[in-house]
Length: 131
Image (tube, rainbow, N blue to C red; front, side):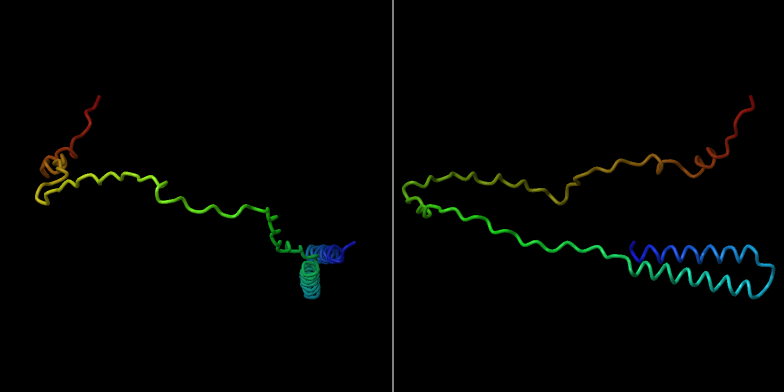
C-alpha cells in the first residue's frame, strides 16, 4: 500500500476523533483544546500524504525520427528561354472618380424629429377609456 493512502487514513481518523470530541464537549476548555489539536493533526497528515503522493511523470520530449533519404535524380535544368510561354496580363480596370461634393448616402428625415414637444406630451396624457 502506498504511504500517502495510510497518511490519508490517519488524517480521517484524526478528523473523526476531533468531531467526536466536539460533539461531546460540555463547555470544558480541555475538550476544545483536544478538538483543535486533533483537527490540526488531521490537516497535517492530509497535507503530508498529498506531498508524498507519486508524481505523474511528464512525457519525455520525443525527438523526430529522420526521414529515410531516397536516392533522387539530379535536379533538372531550368527550361530554355524559347520554351517559356508569355502570359498576357490584363490591365487594371479604370478607377471611377468620386466627387467630394456629392453626398454618397442621403439621410432620411427621422419621424421623431418632426413631432413637436406638445404632440409628445399630448400622447402621453391620454387615458384609456372605461369599458
